[in-house]
Image 1: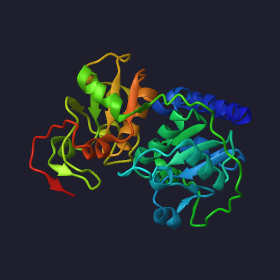
Image 2: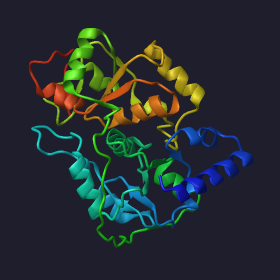
Image 3: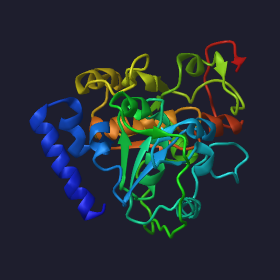
Image 4: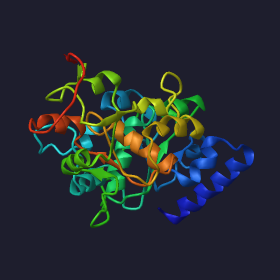
Amino acid sequence: MNWKISILLLVLIVSACKEEKTFETEQFKETYLIEPAMLSDLVDHQNIKIVDFRKKEIYNDEHIIGAINIWRTDIEDTSYDYEGMMASPSQMEELFGKLGIKTGDTLVIYDDKGLCDAARLWWVLQNYDYNNVKLLHGGIAGWKAMNGEITSTIPVVTATSFKLPKNPKMKYYASKEQVQEAVKSNITILDTRTTDEFSGKRQKRGAAEAGRIPNSIHIDWTEAIDYPGDKRMKSLQELERIYSRLKITKDEPILVYCHSGVRSAHTTFVLTQLLGYENVKNYDGSWTEWSYHNDLPLQRDSITVIK
């Protein structure tokens, strides 16, 4: 991260902690979360790039002033027979260069879904060893609640050069083959979809069949946030209680999945960045890929309805 931005962030954190010791300010130094009040002091910094991670038509209607738009399809590798796979490093470099993002810029990403979508971009960049990323806690609703400026004006960007680190560690990435081994080895596999998807009652479009990966544990990703309300993270105490249902220690391996690796990216963020789990991998293809291969095992409990 740009050293000037790092110093400014540190000043803001210390100031916030002196004023009020909340979940957000206490955890900020250790996570990728940023509060709207902190962003308001950084929004005009030349090395801060704000990313609105929502569908383009929603972004066009209103967004944080200066924000550029990225959506899931922009960070997808379309060479597969199924949708949702993670874009390659070269794809990400080309996209960011076109958007005027420079190597070393700090990205502040937001959405309107409790950081579910934003966490997918965070996860992709983590795998490619790009750590200059913050997620706006509370999303655009939190920004508007503090009277943050919004606009429908699309910013003019100048294309630049963007490069990711070479030989990325892929530290939160799991492949289909790794999941196959996990099924055989009784490693914890966490399904973060809805109850109906987990049981097999609902088959989302894009999946070849309904059901779940054998031996999966189910914890819906929405349990981590105030989903009906402001969609902010629940308290650490409540998060610890929720994920204690895994019944494992924090150094044991966990493979997380959902329909296409988006909701499970959010859970990966919660487990690793808020709760300190040390060995978490998000299955990129998730159920979309797993169900596509008819030689892979699955389980289901219910009659399927395709939606």
